[in-house]
Amino acid sequence: MRQQFLSDNNAAICPEALAALVAENATGHAIGYGDDETTLKAERAIAELFETDCSVFFVFNGTSANALSIAQICKPYNAVISHAFSHVQWDEANAVGFFGSGASQLTINTPAAKLSLEAVSQRATQFEGVHHVKVNALTLTQSTELGTAYSLDELSAFGELAKRHQLKFHIDGARFANAVASLDTTPAEMSWRRGVDVLSFGGVKNGLAVGECVIFFDKALAHEFAWRRKQAGQLNSKMRFVTAPWLALLKDDVWLKNARHANAMAQRLAAGLQSIEGVSLMHPVEANGVFINLPAALQAGLRDKGWEFYTFVPPNGCRLMCSWDTSLETIDAFIADAQALPPAPAG
Ligand SMILES: *Cc1c(COP(=O)(O)O)cnc(C)c1O
Picture 1 (cartoon, rainbow, N blue to C red):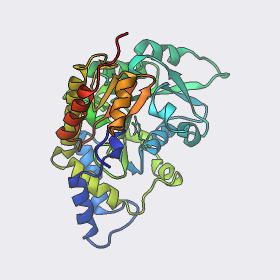
Picture 2 (cartoon, helix red, strand yellow):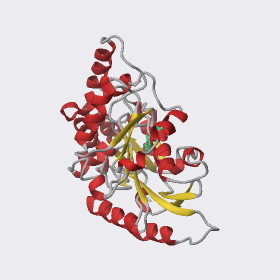
Picture 3 (cartoon, rainbow, N blue to C red):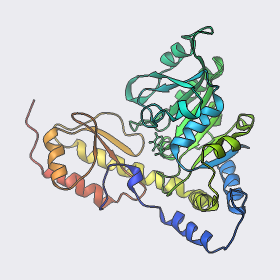
Picture 4 (cartoon, rainbow, N blue to C red):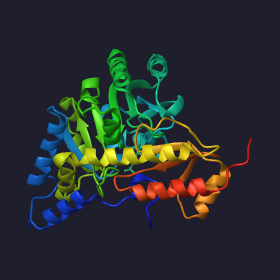
Protein backbone atom coordinates (compact mmCIF):
# COMPACT_ATOMS: atom_id res chain seq x y z
CA MET A 1 0.00 0.00 0.00
CA ARG A 2 1.07 3.61 -0.40
CA GLN A 3 2.62 5.45 2.54
CA GLN A 4 0.18 6.04 5.37
CA PHE A 5 0.24 7.40 8.91
CA LEU A 6 -1.13 4.47 10.92
CA SER A 7 2.15 3.46 12.55
CA ASP A 8 5.87 3.76 12.16
CA ASN A 9 5.93 -0.04 12.15
CA ASN A 10 4.11 -0.04 8.81
CA ALA A 11 7.28 1.10 7.05
CA ALA A 12 9.61 -1.31 5.32
CA ILE A 13 13.19 -2.17 6.30
CA CYS A 14 15.66 0.64 5.71
CA PRO A 15 18.17 0.04 2.88
CA GLU A 16 21.22 -0.13 5.16
CA ALA A 17 19.61 -2.83 7.31
CA LEU A 18 18.41 -4.78 4.30
CA ALA A 19 21.84 -4.65 2.67
CA ALA A 20 23.39 -5.92 5.90
CA LEU A 21 20.94 -8.79 5.99
CA VAL A 22 21.81 -9.79 2.44
CA ALA A 23 25.54 -9.44 3.13
CA GLU A 24 25.30 -11.54 6.28
CA ASN A 25 23.46 -14.18 4.32
CA ALA A 26 26.33 -14.42 1.88
CA THR A 27 28.87 -15.28 4.59
CA GLY A 28 27.85 -18.92 4.79
CA HIS A 29 27.63 -20.68 8.13
CA ALA A 30 28.04 -19.23 11.61
CA ILE A 31 27.52 -20.39 15.17
CA GLY A 32 23.93 -20.06 16.39
CA TYR A 33 22.20 -18.51 19.42
CA GLY A 34 24.16 -15.28 19.37
CA ASP A 35 27.60 -16.80 19.89
CA ASP A 36 28.70 -15.43 16.53
CA GLU A 37 31.07 -12.65 15.45
CA THR A 38 28.31 -10.36 14.16
CA THR A 39 26.36 -10.45 17.41
CA LEU A 40 29.51 -9.83 19.43
CA LYS A 41 30.24 -6.81 17.23
CA ALA A 42 26.69 -5.51 17.66
CA GLU A 43 26.93 -5.82 21.45
CA ARG A 44 30.20 -3.90 21.37
CA ALA A 45 28.73 -1.27 19.08
CA ILE A 46 25.83 -0.72 21.49
CA ALA A 47 28.26 -0.31 24.39
CA GLU A 48 30.26 2.15 22.30
CA LEU A 49 27.18 4.12 21.34
CA PHE A 50 26.17 4.39 24.99
CA GLU A 51 29.76 5.15 26.03
CA THR A 52 29.73 2.63 28.84
CA ASP A 53 30.31 -0.97 29.76
CA CYS A 54 26.88 -2.60 29.77
CA SER A 55 25.09 -5.93 29.25
CA VAL A 56 23.30 -6.17 25.94
CA PHE A 57 20.64 -8.70 24.90
CA PHE A 58 18.66 -8.85 21.68
CA VAL A 59 15.08 -10.10 21.73
CA PHE A 60 12.43 -10.37 19.03
CA ASN A 61 10.16 -7.45 19.91
CA GLY A 62 9.36 -4.58 22.22
CA THR A 63 6.81 -6.33 24.37
CA SER A 64 9.38 -8.94 25.37
CA ALA A 65 12.10 -6.32 25.81
CA ASN A 66 9.88 -4.46 28.27
CA ALA A 67 8.33 -7.43 30.03
CA LEU A 68 11.58 -9.35 30.45
CA SER A 69 13.56 -6.37 31.67
CA ILE A 70 10.86 -5.44 34.17
CA ALA A 71 10.53 -9.09 35.23
CA GLN A 72 14.27 -9.10 35.78
CA ILE A 73 14.11 -6.23 38.27
CA CYS A 74 10.88 -7.23 40.03
CA LYS A 75 10.07 -10.13 42.31
CA PRO A 76 6.54 -11.62 42.05
CA TYR A 77 5.29 -9.45 44.94
CA ASN A 78 6.82 -6.27 43.55
CA ALA A 79 5.10 -3.52 41.60
CA VAL A 80 6.42 -1.22 38.93
CA ILE A 81 5.10 2.32 38.62
CA SER A 82 3.97 3.00 35.07
CA HIS A 83 1.79 5.40 33.15
CA ALA A 84 -1.84 4.38 32.56
CA PHE A 85 -1.38 5.23 28.90
CA SER A 86 1.86 3.36 28.38
CA HIS A 87 2.62 0.46 26.10
CA VAL A 88 3.50 -1.78 29.05
CA GLN A 89 0.13 -1.11 30.66
CA TRP A 90 -2.15 -0.67 27.69
CA ASP A 91 -0.69 -2.64 24.79
CA GLU A 92 1.11 -5.68 26.12
CA ALA A 93 -1.65 -7.96 27.43
CA ASN A 94 -0.08 -7.82 30.89
CA ALA A 95 3.14 -9.44 29.73
CA VAL A 96 4.75 -7.78 32.76
CA GLY A 97 2.47 -9.75 35.08
CA PHE A 98 3.02 -12.97 33.17
CA PHE A 99 6.78 -12.85 32.75
CA GLY A 100 7.10 -11.18 36.14
CA SER A 101 5.39 -14.19 37.77
CA GLY A 102 2.75 -11.94 39.28
CA ALA A 103 4.55 -8.62 39.49
CA SER A 104 2.03 -5.84 38.96
CA GLN A 105 1.83 -2.29 37.73
CA LEU A 106 0.77 0.74 39.70
CA THR A 107 -0.45 3.17 37.12
CA ILE A 108 -0.66 6.93 37.04
CA ASN A 109 -2.79 8.93 34.62
CA THR A 110 -1.08 12.31 34.30
CA PRO A 111 -1.43 14.42 31.10
CA ALA A 112 0.43 13.92 27.81
CA ALA A 113 1.37 10.33 28.73
CA LYS A 114 4.09 11.76 30.96
CA LEU A 115 4.54 10.80 34.58
CA SER A 116 4.87 13.58 37.12
CA LEU A 117 7.36 13.56 39.97
CA GLU A 118 4.63 14.22 42.52
CA ALA A 119 2.51 11.32 41.35
CA VAL A 120 5.44 8.91 41.21
CA SER A 121 6.54 9.99 44.64
CA GLN A 122 3.05 9.44 45.99
CA ARG A 123 2.88 5.96 44.45
CA ALA A 124 6.35 5.07 45.69
CA THR A 125 5.41 5.82 49.29
CA GLN A 126 1.74 4.81 49.17
CA PHE A 127 2.16 1.38 50.66
CA GLU A 128 3.95 0.16 53.71
CA GLY A 129 3.97 -3.29 55.13
CA VAL A 130 3.36 -6.83 54.14
CA HIS A 131 -0.27 -6.55 53.04
CA HIS A 132 0.50 -4.54 49.93
CA VAL A 133 2.68 -4.99 46.92
CA LYS A 134 6.21 -3.77 47.44
CA VAL A 135 6.89 -0.98 44.98
CA ASN A 136 10.40 -1.30 43.64
CA ALA A 137 10.59 -0.09 40.06
CA LEU A 138 9.68 2.78 37.79
CA THR A 139 9.16 2.59 34.04
CA LEU A 140 8.59 5.45 31.69
CA THR A 141 8.46 5.77 27.92
CA GLN A 142 10.83 7.99 25.93
CA SER A 143 9.50 9.26 23.59
CA THR A 144 6.00 8.77 24.94
CA GLU A 145 2.91 7.17 23.46
CA LEU A 146 1.56 10.67 22.75
CA GLY A 147 4.61 11.92 20.87
CA THR A 148 6.01 13.92 23.75
CA ALA A 149 9.43 13.59 25.32
CA TYR A 150 10.86 14.03 28.80
CA SER A 151 13.60 16.66 28.99
CA LEU A 152 17.00 15.70 30.35
CA ASP A 153 16.23 17.62 33.54
CA GLU A 154 12.98 15.73 33.97
CA LEU A 155 14.81 12.44 33.47
CA SER A 156 17.44 13.47 36.01
CA ALA A 157 14.74 14.25 38.53
CA PHE A 158 13.13 10.84 37.97
CA GLY A 159 16.53 9.21 38.32
CA GLU A 160 17.08 10.94 41.65
CA LEU A 161 13.60 10.13 42.84
CA ALA A 162 14.12 6.48 41.89
CA LYS A 163 17.35 6.39 43.86
CA ARG A 164 15.74 8.08 46.87
CA HIS A 165 12.94 5.51 46.96
CA GLN A 166 15.14 2.57 45.96
CA LEU A 167 13.30 2.02 42.70
CA LYS A 168 14.98 0.42 39.73
CA PHE A 169 14.58 2.71 36.73
CA HIS A 170 13.51 1.29 33.35
CA ILE A 171 12.82 3.12 30.11
CA ASP A 172 10.69 1.79 27.28
CA GLY A 173 12.67 3.19 24.39
CA ALA A 174 10.73 1.81 21.43
CA ARG A 175 11.22 5.35 20.07
CA PHE A 176 14.35 6.23 22.05
CA ALA A 177 16.10 7.27 18.83
CA ASN A 178 13.38 9.81 18.05
CA ALA A 179 13.75 11.34 21.48
CA VAL A 180 17.56 11.53 21.19
CA ALA A 181 17.13 13.32 17.87
CA SER A 182 14.43 15.61 19.20
CA LEU A 183 16.37 16.62 22.32
CA ASP A 184 19.57 16.87 20.29
CA THR A 185 21.39 14.84 22.91
CA THR A 186 23.25 11.53 23.09
CA PRO A 187 22.10 8.04 24.12
CA ALA A 188 24.35 8.19 27.19
CA GLU A 189 22.99 11.56 28.30
CA MET A 190 19.45 10.33 27.94
CA SER A 191 19.94 7.05 29.84
CA TRP A 192 22.50 5.95 32.44
CA ARG A 193 23.76 9.46 33.08
CA ARG A 194 20.22 10.26 34.23
CA GLY A 195 20.15 7.20 36.50
CA VAL A 196 18.46 4.73 34.15
CA ASP A 197 19.24 1.11 35.06
CA VAL A 198 17.64 -0.75 32.16
CA LEU A 199 16.60 0.34 28.70
CA SER A 200 14.48 -1.30 26.02
CA PHE A 201 16.19 0.19 22.95
CA GLY A 202 13.99 0.01 19.89
CA GLY A 203 15.24 -0.75 16.41
CA VAL A 204 12.13 -1.91 14.58
CA LYS A 205 10.33 1.43 14.36
CA ASN A 206 13.67 2.94 13.36
CA GLY A 207 14.04 0.74 10.27
CA LEU A 208 14.59 -2.91 11.20
CA ALA A 209 12.38 -5.91 10.49
CA VAL A 210 12.78 -7.56 13.86
CA GLY A 211 14.81 -7.36 17.04
CA GLU A 212 14.83 -4.95 19.96
CA CYS A 213 17.63 -4.59 22.42
CA VAL A 214 17.68 -4.77 26.22
CA ILE A 215 20.52 -2.88 27.84
CA PHE A 216 21.48 -3.25 31.50
CA PHE A 217 23.68 -0.34 32.55
CA ASP A 218 24.11 -1.94 35.95
CA LYS A 219 25.58 -5.23 34.81
CA ALA A 220 24.76 -6.92 38.10
CA LEU A 221 21.09 -6.54 37.23
CA ALA A 222 21.61 -8.74 34.18
CA HIS A 223 22.44 -11.75 36.35
CA GLU A 224 21.04 -14.89 34.66
CA PHE A 225 19.02 -12.79 32.21
CA ALA A 226 20.24 -15.12 29.47
CA TRP A 227 18.07 -17.87 30.98
CA ARG A 228 15.08 -15.58 31.30
CA ARG A 229 15.34 -14.67 27.63
CA LYS A 230 15.71 -18.32 26.60
CA GLN A 231 12.79 -19.51 28.71
CA ALA A 232 10.60 -16.78 27.24
CA GLY A 233 11.34 -18.00 23.73
CA GLN A 234 13.25 -14.84 22.90
CA LEU A 235 16.64 -16.31 22.06
CA ASN A 236 16.94 -16.36 18.29
CA SER A 237 19.00 -19.33 17.05
CA LYS A 238 19.94 -17.35 13.93
CA MET A 239 20.71 -14.26 15.95
CA ARG A 240 23.15 -12.84 13.39
CA PHE A 241 20.24 -12.02 11.10
CA VAL A 242 18.93 -9.70 13.81
CA THR A 243 22.30 -8.27 14.77
CA ALA A 244 23.72 -7.68 11.29
CA PRO A 245 20.93 -5.19 10.53
CA TRP A 246 21.42 -3.68 13.99
CA LEU A 247 25.09 -3.12 13.19
CA ALA A 248 24.04 -1.38 10.00
CA LEU A 249 21.75 0.93 11.97
CA LEU A 250 24.57 1.82 14.33
CA LYS A 251 27.20 2.34 11.63
CA ASP A 252 27.55 5.99 10.60
CA ASP A 253 24.59 6.87 12.85
CA VAL A 254 21.97 5.57 10.45
CA TRP A 255 19.64 5.22 13.47
CA LEU A 256 19.97 8.95 14.10
CA LYS A 257 19.50 9.86 10.45
CA ASN A 258 16.32 7.73 10.35
CA ALA A 259 14.99 9.27 13.55
CA ARG A 260 15.78 12.82 12.48
CA HIS A 261 14.02 12.29 9.20
CA ALA A 262 10.88 10.87 10.82
CA ASN A 263 10.84 13.75 13.32
CA ALA A 264 11.29 16.34 10.59
CA MET A 265 8.39 14.88 8.63
CA ALA A 266 6.21 15.06 11.75
CA GLN A 267 7.15 18.73 12.22
CA ARG A 268 6.31 19.53 8.62
CA LEU A 269 3.00 17.68 8.87
CA ALA A 270 2.04 19.46 12.08
CA ALA A 271 2.91 22.86 10.68
CA GLY A 272 0.90 22.28 7.51
CA LEU A 273 -2.18 20.96 9.25
CA GLN A 274 -2.29 23.70 11.85
CA SER A 275 -2.97 26.26 9.14
CA ILE A 276 -6.40 24.66 8.71
CA GLU A 277 -9.48 26.05 10.43
CA GLY A 278 -10.60 23.92 13.39
CA VAL A 279 -7.37 21.96 13.64
CA SER A 280 -5.31 22.12 16.81
CA LEU A 281 -2.39 20.18 18.22
CA MET A 282 -3.21 17.96 21.20
CA HIS A 283 0.40 17.79 22.31
CA PRO A 284 3.67 19.36 21.25
CA VAL A 285 5.41 17.37 18.52
CA GLU A 286 8.56 16.15 20.24
CA ALA A 287 9.21 12.99 18.24
CA ASN A 288 7.85 11.36 15.07
CA GLY A 289 4.14 11.43 15.87
CA VAL A 290 1.58 14.18 15.40
CA PHE A 291 -1.30 14.08 17.86
CA ILE A 292 -3.83 16.49 16.56
CA ASN A 293 -7.53 17.33 16.75
CA LEU A 294 -9.09 16.96 13.33
CA PRO A 295 -12.80 17.80 13.00
CA ALA A 296 -14.91 14.73 12.16
CA ALA A 297 -15.75 15.97 8.66
CA LEU A 298 -12.06 16.53 7.91
CA GLN A 299 -11.18 13.04 9.10
CA ALA A 300 -13.93 11.56 6.95
CA GLY A 301 -12.87 13.60 3.94
CA LEU A 302 -9.25 12.48 4.29
CA ARG A 303 -10.28 8.85 4.64
CA ASP A 304 -12.46 9.20 1.53
CA LYS A 305 -9.32 10.26 -0.28
CA GLY A 306 -7.66 7.03 0.83
CA TRP A 307 -5.64 8.25 3.80
CA GLU A 308 -5.26 6.00 6.82
CA PHE A 309 -4.56 7.07 10.38
CA TYR A 310 -5.98 6.32 13.79
CA THR A 311 -8.49 8.32 15.75
CA PHE A 312 -6.50 7.71 18.89
CA VAL A 313 -8.49 9.77 21.35
CA PRO A 314 -12.06 9.90 19.97
CA PRO A 315 -13.83 11.76 18.62
CA ASN A 316 -11.25 14.19 17.22
CA GLY A 317 -7.85 13.24 18.59
CA CYS A 318 -5.90 11.68 15.75
CA ARG A 319 -2.50 10.06 15.63
CA LEU A 320 -0.35 10.53 12.54
CA MET A 321 2.91 8.60 12.70
CA CYS A 322 5.88 9.33 10.48
CA SER A 323 8.65 6.83 9.81
CA TRP A 324 12.19 6.72 8.48
CA ASP A 325 10.85 6.52 4.94
CA THR A 326 7.91 8.95 5.05
CA SER A 327 8.48 11.14 2.02
CA LEU A 328 8.05 14.86 1.61
CA GLU A 329 5.61 14.08 -1.19
CA THR A 330 3.44 12.03 1.17
CA ILE A 331 3.39 14.81 3.75
CA ASP A 332 2.64 17.51 1.21
CA ALA A 333 -0.06 15.45 -0.52
CA PHE A 334 -1.78 14.83 2.83
CA ILE A 335 -1.64 18.52 3.74
CA ALA A 336 -2.88 19.55 0.31
CA ASP A 337 -5.80 17.12 0.54
CA ALA A 338 -6.66 18.40 4.01
CA GLN A 339 -6.48 22.03 2.89
CA ALA A 340 -8.68 21.34 -0.13
CA LEU A 341 -11.50 19.90 1.97
CA PRO A 342 -14.32 22.26 2.93
CA PRO A 343 -13.75 24.06 6.24
CA ALA A 344 -15.34 22.55 9.33
CA PRO A 345 -18.65 24.10 10.39
CA ALA A 346 -18.08 26.64 13.14
CA GLY A 347 -18.78 25.73 16.77
C1 LIG B 1 5.85 -0.20 19.36
C2 LIG B 1 6.08 -0.04 20.78
C3 LIG B 1 6.65 -1.08 21.55
C4 LIG B 1 7.02 -2.42 20.96
O1 LIG B 1 5.95 -3.22 20.66
P1 LIG B 1 6.05 -4.64 19.98
O2 LIG B 1 4.89 -4.67 19.07
O3 LIG B 1 5.94 -5.66 21.05
O4 LIG B 1 7.35 -4.73 19.27
C5 LIG B 1 6.93 -0.83 22.87
N1 LIG B 1 6.66 0.36 23.44
C6 LIG B 1 6.12 1.37 22.73
C7 LIG B 1 5.90 2.69 23.38
C8 LIG B 1 5.79 1.19 21.40
O5 LIG B 1 5.25 2.20 20.71
